[in-house]
Structure formats: structure tokens, C-alpha cells
Image (cartoon, rainbow, N blue to C red; front, top):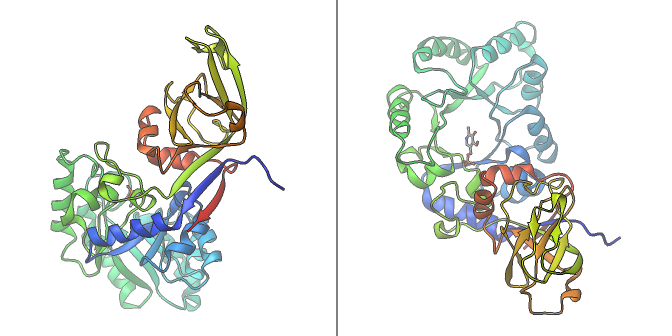
Length: 373
Ligand SMILES: Cc1ncc(COP(=O)(O)O)c(C=O)c1O
């Protein structure tokens, strides 16, 4: 059945280009691709299928996300759970499914030791971990003064081959803002406290990959750049050589002519100054398009930009296509681009007073994903 769904067209070529660009930027580092939050709203199964041959590991936030990934890739070696585990059941799941956990809190070690009391015989391979150090983000991770005690505990487990420390990581709090002194402080803290420890090192998210080459180390951890959006406000993804993977489209459902002075949509917040032609398109905040978008934010239709007018509602919104030169009525059913190839998501994020990350993650199950070559 043909339906009037909103479609996110996803470009394989753009995804490959973005991985290639990342390799060029950090030629000596391995890539841990961040596919958490449903691959930043792009659909984790489609993205992971394409990306696994191109990168060196996949990272998700939660055990639940890892479960979906493990089902799709039963033998894939390197699935990292960034938020670690909170419950014994989660730990057991991680062990049984050969997931790599980020150890960021004593509590997780307590859980592991609790597990070992009765189950050491069940452990067929050591538990693989990355250890997270808090160098200044103050969100997750061990503080540098905690490292000596932590090492005692980890070494005891490592000697018995119960644990395998893959490496040490930290996360920047402000890598999108080079002027922030936190970046240098975090770099030197990591170098001072972690660089000498045995194991691989990882610091850089997308903004750090672009702006802080000293942070590339053994593994980079790109998220946003993989999907072709820029993490830096003053730079577009295109200017950095990255291409948008997603182009979000919605069809025109109706077209009406209105006379000057007509108020349209909820609360009539927009009033036409001239006789106008208004198209209603089938996407709204129920699909994840931001309700608080500013008036006159552009959409793209047949090679031209048109402004959004009136309030975005749950399933629909209106655009002013008065300046369209072709036969208006023929446009019913035409696809309008909300962001993607022609309208950078960064521009929409600015108009919605948010960041591209949030726009991607806000998309709801109503959106259909179609991959194109
Ligand atoms: C620990 C960690 N590493 C890497 C990333 C990827 O960040 P970005 O999407 O900015 O590349 C994130 C994302 O939030 C993260 O939390």
C-alpha cells in the first residue's frame, strides 16, 4: 500500500564519505562509532549493518541498546556499553553476550566481584572493560586520586584473567569551544594520570576530532560527524568535508489560497500580508519536528526555499508557497525537505534554539527510513 509517510532518506554514500573523512582526520586512530540513541535517530540496525565493515567498534549507551545490536550482529567483537551496568542481571547479560563495559564507578566492580563469588566457573572469557576517568566533565568516571586503589582491584582481577582492560577513556566537556580552558586542563590531566597506564587510550568526540588533534590517541569516538552534521556552531559540516546522511521529507497534503489579512493555524499567530498560497505538509511535533521553530524557517521544495508559517502542530505544519512559479495544485503529494541535502540541520537547530543532536534524537517512530545508494 502506498502511504503518505514522512520519510528520512538515508545516504549510504554520505555515511561512507564521513567515515573516510574521519580516517583522514585521525589516520593513526581506530574508530569507535557512536550508534547510541538509535544511531542518533538514523536507525541503529541500518547504520550498523553498513558501518561495521568500515569501523573498529560500535558504542551504545545502555544494555538495552546493546541487546538490539547483539541480536543483529551475533558474532561482532567490539560492542561497547558506554553507561556500564547498574544491576547484576545487566552484568550477566553483558558477560553472556561478550559486551565490553565502560567501568566508571566502584559500584560496577562490586557487582562483578559479587558475580564472581558463585559464578567464576561460568566465565568463559574475561570481562572486557574500558575504564573511564573523570578529567573534568564530572558526569561519569573515576577521579584521578581514585586511580591507585582502582588499579589494585583491577590488577588482582586481571592476574586471575577475570578481567581484561582494553583501555582508558575520558570525555571532554567543551570540545566544541576551543576557547574554553577546560580542554587543555582535561588533556593535561589525562596525560598526567592515564598516559602511562597499560592499555589503549581514547578521548575525542566529534568536536575534539576536528579541533584537538592531540586528543586523537588510539581510539576516536565520533557520533555527530558520522551522520554528517557539524558539532561546531561556526562551521558547517559541508565546509569540513562531511555530508548529511539524513534528508527528512514530508509530503504536501493540501494547498489553499488565502486573502491578505488571513490568520492561519493554531491561535492564528501568523497573518498573511498579501494574497497567499499556503501548503499544508504532513509533519509536526508528533514526528519530532520542533514545535518551537521560529517563523520563516526554510523548507526546500523543487529547488526553492519556502518559509514555515503559523504554529507547528502535532501532525502538520504550513508553508507559504506564494512565490512558487509552477502550477500550485500540481504540488499536492510533492515531497518537501525539512533538513538534509539542501537545508543543513545545523540551520534548523539554530532556528529551534537547540543542537542537531536533539533534533535527530527527537524523531519518532512515525518516520520511515529509506536507504539509498
Ligand atoms: C562518552 C562519549 N563519547 C563520544 C560521544 C560522541 O560525541 P559526538 O556525537 O559529539 O561525536 C559521546 C556523545 O555524547 C559520548 O557521551
